[in-house]
Length: 315
Image (cartoon, rainbow, N blue to C red; front, top):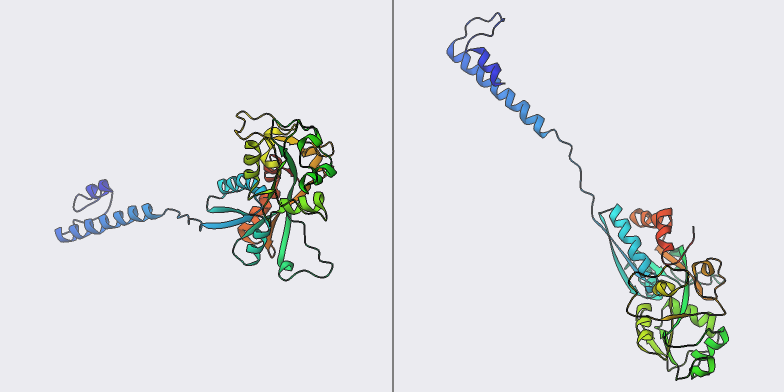
């Protein structure tokens, strides 16, 4: 552009049939040409594509602590693929999760509770809940590593928890008073245990109640006479079908075979293990938007690969 102005030579262009311009006209011509060139450069510099930043989205999931390890990894991977989506993971137990979902306080509930009986019609509000199974879990019966009890039958486990058996010597250990560990009211794991193991009998009032599966593992690891039940996701390093952990956790327990079986992936998948339970993500109405996108991811091959690291997959 500067070269064009120079070539004008204040009056004529070479090879052009221009007559000499008066000084004022020459000045005005140069000014107009310069401004025109600057406008072209300015417009070219501004002609860039503007990409709108996606609106941040926050999703809250609350409920079963048994599902927290797998949900942590699933939500982390989903956020990596969708950076505008953030998750708030909360516990509280399956019952509380479903109650908070019905109240509109969270976006998804994590639950191991079985679907409610609808033979007499759905309970108020429950018709709006949509349950999506994402995997299968197995409750592991855990004892201290120093306990030599080889295995338990369902009857022995029930008699331990109802207080009929109070000494470990009655089931094969060297002896000592049994210390029972159970879960808090509202826990899906407790519901399964009481339905499948206890039946019509109550858990002994001497049982220590723990709020999460992680707390059960920590308590049993510190107390040689203790016995508890937890999701298999919390005892993976001590299951026979899992590779040994590079750095074993400090809290060590032993998974006790029940009716000759442990909650391995195979036994949980074919439900030959007695204490098998479904894992649900529950939405209020049909899933929409990023809630649906997340559920679709969980059920995708990539999502189910993550589920398999902790539980048995459904796809």
